[in-house]
Image (cartoon, rainbow, N blue to C red; front, side):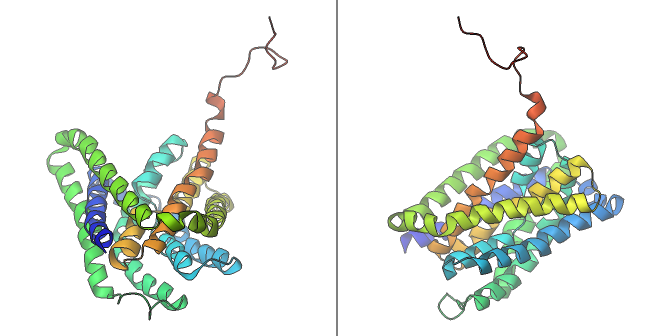
Length: 299
């Protein structure tokens, strides 16, 4: 029980600091890009908010995942990627401006959609009767306080004191990292005895879903005629989720350590397909041997 209380305390602090850091990097132009490039922005939002949850439901329907772990994965599909996807898009030489715009808009939308859709997930998995009561309005208010409010405060600080933002961002990142490491440690400790079993149950499905999500984003962008950098961006935005936001629901509100483990396992494995994509996008930067045969002569 002590672990549960600590998780409920640390998780909001972690998410608040993360979202404040996101706000420091945003400006009005990031939201105005919706009017400048409506087609690709709406395509990305549709893929994140509609297509990915449907894909998650399909993958979980085709596999045998325990209800708590499956519900955790579904809740994660309802939380689009945040600052992590922006960083990975930069590393993959994608359209960083598009990635930031999608993050800005989903940061405004998710606090309202996630509580309502979480209630649907609990009903579908038959968990409404066995889980703690899930008050949608209270959850929505908490989501606003730990996501929208810090984003707004970060944008306000960035607009009023732009010169100080560069000094604020590094310590904010350090605080966020400390809080998230503490949160992950608490959840893992609460499930340490069952961790191998849980990884075996949800690990392969998580990797399958992560690969399918990334490919879906890329192929959807290709079908729509998006440029190379744009295709990479949509692949990452669909393939990377906001584990911190999902953990706030599964660990902080639903108080389910097992459900949170599923979120954490996916949060780690979803990076692997993106790392492959980053390597492929930067393959021209890898030095090659000057010998025509590709073999180095032996002395």
